[in-house]
Length: 383
Image (cartoon, rainbow, N blue to C red):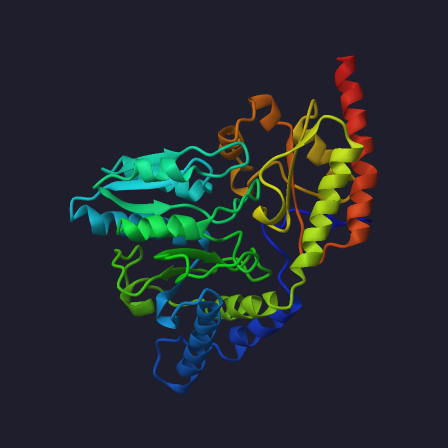
C-alpha cells in the first residue's frame, strides 16, 4: 500500500544512522555521566561530544548548550526562568507574537497570572511582524522578546538579525524558538544577537524526548528543574545519553541533506495545487522566506479534517495544523492571526516534506488530491 508521510513538522522519522549511533548507549555504554568511574566517563565523553556538535552548528560555546527533554521544556524554561530572575529587578514585560507555538503562548498566559505583562505582536497576512510595532511595544520594564524563527504552521521565517539589533540596542534579552528552523535556516547566535535559542531533535530526524536551550554566557535565568545539579546546576536530572548522542548525530547528518531538492519539491507541490485546484490559497510567505519543507493551503469549501481522512485512505499523511493542537477543538491561532476566517481555518491542510520525500510522492499527491477535493465539493453542493 502507498505510504507518503507529509507531516514532518509534527515529527520526523529517526534516521538509521541516528538509531545506529544511539544503540550502544542503551546496553554497552550505559553509565551515569555523573559517575566518576570508567563507565560513567564513557557516557560523559559522549555527552560533551554531542554538546560541541550542536554548539558549533549555532556558533556557540559548548558550555552555552543545556540539554532538555525537548522544545516545550526549553521554551518554558526560557520564559519562566528569565521572568523570575528579572522580576527581582522590577522588570516584568515580555513581548511575543500572536503566531508563536502553543507552548510559548500558553507559558506567556500562565506568566500573566503570576505578575507578567505580555504584549502579543500582530503579524501581517504572510505572518511577518512589523518592526516599528516591535520598537513601539518596548517599555522600561521589558526584559524579553521571544519570536520564533520559522513558523511551524505556515512556514514564515522572521528576520532575526534585524530583531536582534533592536534588542541589543535596548539591552533586552532575545529568545527564539528554532525547533522548526534548526538546520534548515541559517542560525548564528552571535550575528543575530541571540541570548537564548530553543532546539529540538525530533524535527531533524533525531529521537523524541531530547532538546536543548542555548543560553548565552553571562545571561542569568532561574533553573526550571531542581535536583542533583546536572547541566552545571541549571537543569537537574540524569541525562538522556542515548537521546543526546542521537541529537548530535542528527545535526551531523543535517549537513548532508539536500535542502535545495526539498525546496524544489515544495514549490512543485505548491504550484501544482494552486494550478490544478480552483479556489485554493497558499498561507504564509513564499520563496526564501518560507521553510523549505512547508506547504500550507486553504481549500475553499472543503472541511480540513475530512480532507485529511480522504488523503489518509489514499496513503497520504498530512495535518490540519500543529500536532500539539490536534487533541483539542480549538482553531488555529496562527491562521486567525494572518486573517483567515473560521471557515477557512477549518479548510486548511499542512503538508510538510522530508529529506526522504520524492518527486514520485509529489506526483502521486497531485494526482489524487484534485480528485478528492472535486468530489468533496460536489457533495457539499448537493447538501
